[in-house]
Image (cartoon, rainbow, N blue to C red; front, side, top):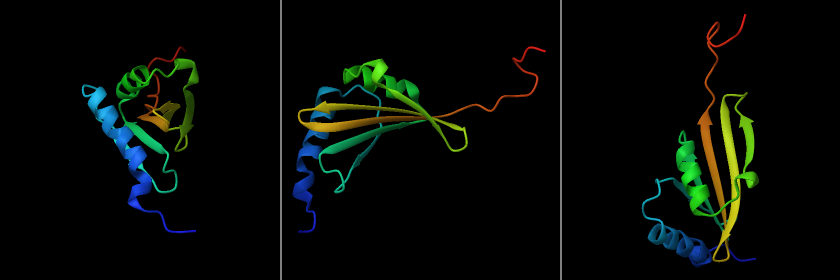
Length: 109
């Protein structure tokens, strides 16, 4: 088995360029392309679930297809969704801090 080369990432990078051209007004998100998953582009929004939602809607991902998780001992909300765009898998992830409840605020006695 040969070592991965940059050309192996060309399909994912081409899809990324296409998304940027087609959806230039969407919020900027972190982008990850990897030799481990050369047929996938990961888009992640940190502390901005509105950005996640804008991308989800633009990519035509059904809201019911979004998986909600909690991590970091219950302090971080994670939204995870998947789509395929021109043959490349897209993973859309949104991270947001879960506010710590303040004792006595909003709690019925």
